[in-house]
Every structure is written in structure tokens, then in C-alpha cells.
Length: 92
Image (tube, rainbow, N blue to C red; front, side, top):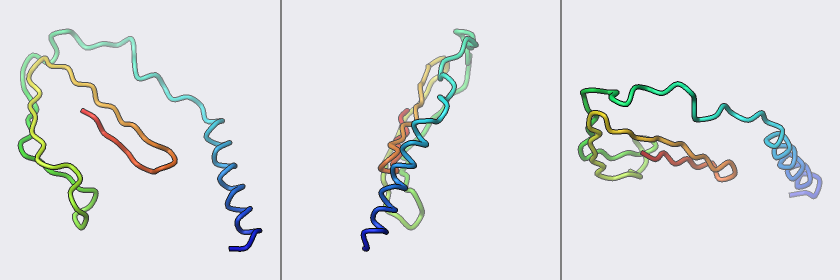
């Protein structure tokens, strides 16, 4: 790779970092609006022996997940992104 092309790539990276530094903050994950403490009064979410992959043609990355969220149980879901590595983690 020529030095000019390498310099161009490095400057593009710097430009992206400057862009990310100047982004407006996202809205807070907390709000003043809260559901009643008894919500939801009935129903459940159940997952039995589920496995996941990023695409049908790719190997599975999560294996044999089983859980049950019962009525009135609270669950926090967060999505974390690592900007420079392009990976994502979804936590339940």
C-alpha cells in the first residue's frame, strides 16, 4: 500500500472519531413514566431450548437457551455495542 493511501485511511479514521465525539447524546434510558407495580398482572414469556445464529448459513452462537419470565417479574434488556469491533451483545 502506498504511503498516500495509508495516510488517507488513517485520516479517514481520525475523521470518524471526530464525528463520533461530536454526536448529540441519546435520550436517557430512564423516564418519569413508570408502569404500575402490579403490571403485568398475568401472562408469561417462555423460551425452551432455543439456539441462535447470525444467519442460517453460519454456526450457532447461542445454544439451548431456556427461560421463563413470569407475571409481574421485571427484566432489564440492554444492548451494548463496541464501536470499533463491530460486535453487539444483547443481555436479558
